[in-house]
Image 1 (cartoon, helix red, strand yellow):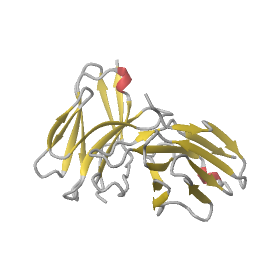
Image 2 (cartoon, rainbow over the protein chains, first blue to last red):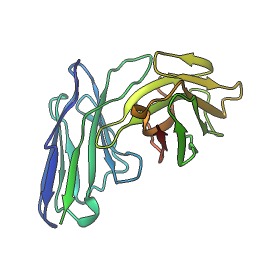
Image 3 (tube, rainbow over the protein chains, first blue to last red):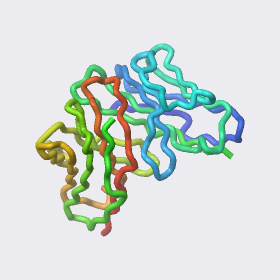
Image 4 (spheres, rainbow over the protein chains, first blue to last red):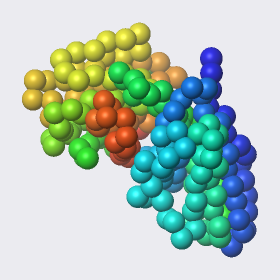
Length: 115
Length: 112
């Protein structure tokens, strides 16, 4: 069964350092999402791509976060500089469009710890 | 975006039927109701989706009353492996560019 691949699985970094997460969606899925999930909370949408275009990045803290999906396939989420409050699970999801039912397929996530 | 309200947590014994209700009073005409399940240290997993009345699959049933202001996820005969967080989402899935928003979910604990 096809899966959404994410790396790294775990990342520990110090405050003010740069960190990057990579996501490879299921082949053929045009829509890609990055979510952030703080422990005990539900996932929060950071950015949504349709192919290579950003559809929604209203919740992305653009002073330190950036996301790209240059060729409309895999995607990178970057944080620079990292802050203590960025410690969270970063989840990538993809969905097939057009679709009668928009099912999101999530990866296992990248857990970030900022010291 | 329609806001959803769910119980924070629920407990159940193995073998029982569990019903988790989600309120979405301001659901829009084009909105569908979707439920996801999340185990610790994993991404959420799609369970079921519906627009009105009843939907059933091999995992769960979804009951939606005529006014669509609430919905109930029904898990038949739960087992320990059903212990997870369950999220109710409401959104326009036909227009694929609208965001899907997760709330805090319902933490279900199944007890032996």
